[in-house]
Image 1 (cartoon, rainbow, N blue to C red):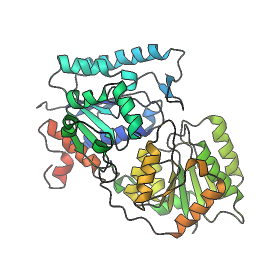
Image 2: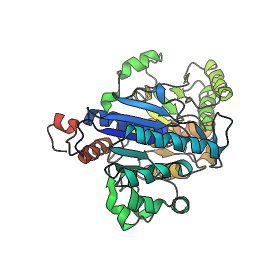
Image 3: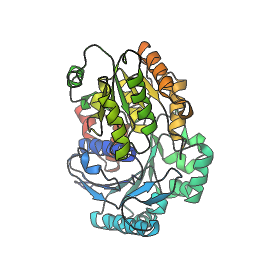
Length: 407
């Protein structure tokens, strides 16, 4: 492809949490840096996409939002529509975006067929009428346990899409930590399209305030800072309630300050419970949402989270002590990820069934008294993604040129 102003369509279905959106936006920022003349269109169902800083020359197309229940079933999030009607509407919007924007590259996050197959008409149109458009699949480090993944892939014919429809599969993980080709028995054709990018590591240049400024904002003196995040917050209340109970009930006062970020998707009544806990302790700060979470994490002595992809990658990028209480329903993905990291000594792990204020307090004490982990994971994923996409246009990424190295 030789278009001087490349067009890239990004699909992020975003039915639960913020992980897909944040991952896609991180890639969008990298592409804006590597391909400064490119125009990007992000198609997403996220209700909060506009709350984040957007790359230059990227626009948003908002799809009617879906929500994923704990059972794994989807429903319309806010509109009084049947799921089938909502999906047909989303399909039409996606196809219209494709034909109107006419992208050179379509980059799909995680779901090869889209939610409930909603991307299949778009994929069919590209293969039939837009043969020069490249289809690229972004693959999260871990999908789910192998048996569940095989069942879901079979239902939506994912092995065929990987082997015959997508031109490239960008793996956003480190195969030495988890090898998806072996775990999910990917075909030889799919393996040939697989590009092991490494985790989509964050740059320390994204930390926009020094640690001392963050500590001053929170009124800290010499006590450690523990940052607790539940991602979007849709299912993180148990973890956050446990940490607030631990802080409020700590004999003599907690020997650290906890910054708890609920996430914008947590129910209002649950946020209120956490704010009431904040009123009971001067060692606790509760925020609903901040686009500067990475800056707070950079100032932390310990990070506690649920082992979602972005939280893990940010903690790995910072080399911080971490403690994870993973979600285990409807997917095992976070549990598998947390176990792999704990096995390498990169994190501590509390299983959800063992979570309590007391177990959390004990693990926090151990974590704060121990050394920071020695991280050896591959974290160059964004650079590799940028170089791979730039290579589709026979261009060298601008970030590589700035560093004086080949793509």
